[in-house]
Length: 77
Ligand SMILES: [Zn+2]
Image 1 (cartoon, rainbow, N blue to C red):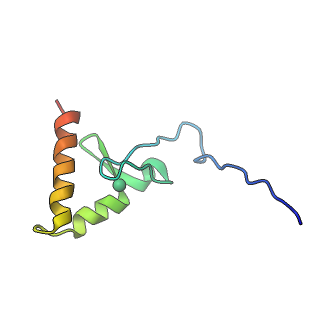
Image 2: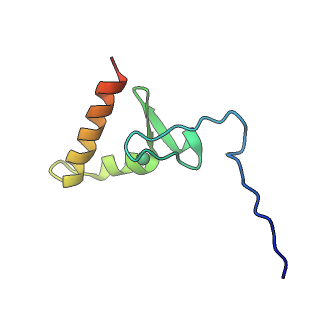
Image 3: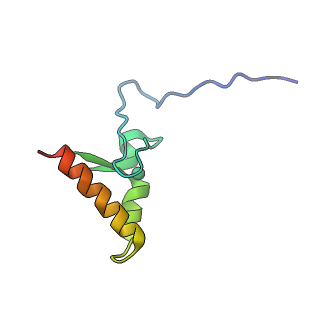
């Protein structure tokens, strides 16, 4: 039985920005390429999609809206 050592792959290049999503607080595997920056806040593609697909009146909508509001109030003076 051959055991292979699993090498930890870094994000590719050194100095790649690793932003944290303002909604789910996760860093996408692709780093900054895996999302968008809105008013200085990072949003991963997953959450971006969720916001786009969530309708007003949806329970998730209120949740997301509140989170964005809170972050924007803290992040932007
Ligand atoms: Zn996210």
